[in-house]
Image (cartoon, rainbow, N blue to C red; front, side):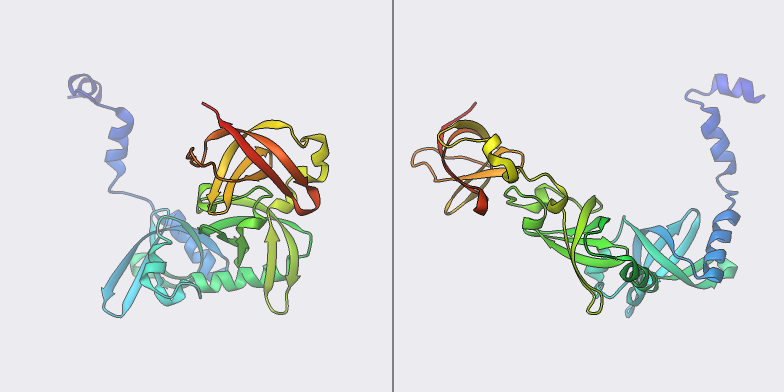
Length: 282
């Protein structure tokens, strides 16, 4: 029976999928293996996805890195200084990681990797390049309620919520997720002690600089509730400008509610607005 006849007689037949099936047992890994081999020879940094974890023995745990069709092994102790447990190791699964090839298993066309070596290489280069007032791209590695862990060229940096934006941030997890890319400014740098502070809000427009052009005392404006605390309710009025209002006795609010507020006091030097909720909007 010819291929043409088969394509007519078999319901659901797809020539492209049929071609894939014919070659699925004859995968050519030579190109991927050559890139691994070259990285080992030249000491270059590679990047691949950590697709799983295996524990072949009680005291041995390996991460599995996939580079094309080639499989690599990342020992737990080579995952990086911040990875001290299997739980922390597991948090890397599904993400792309950097590594250096430390050994080749030629007969099986597999390799052994070290993320720690790659990070140390990257950190050394980054500390030489970083400067105060420099704008850089950071990658989000971990997000908590009031703090985000960023990575800049292998260097880990903790940035507090109040450096993310001028507006009130109740929970950074509503703003960022792991893997996000964030433009930040280096606001202080101590290369000798390996300490760096960055700010995302330093690169954003601050409406407080010209607040008188936008808002007036006794003016009434539409806002959105961005946070609720024991001492009051935060309402975002415009851009990065929030007002603090007291709780109302008989109305309950939730984050995201739209309200009308009346401004009672504006203190630009303290970046503070005292206001009162007039009513909730539908």
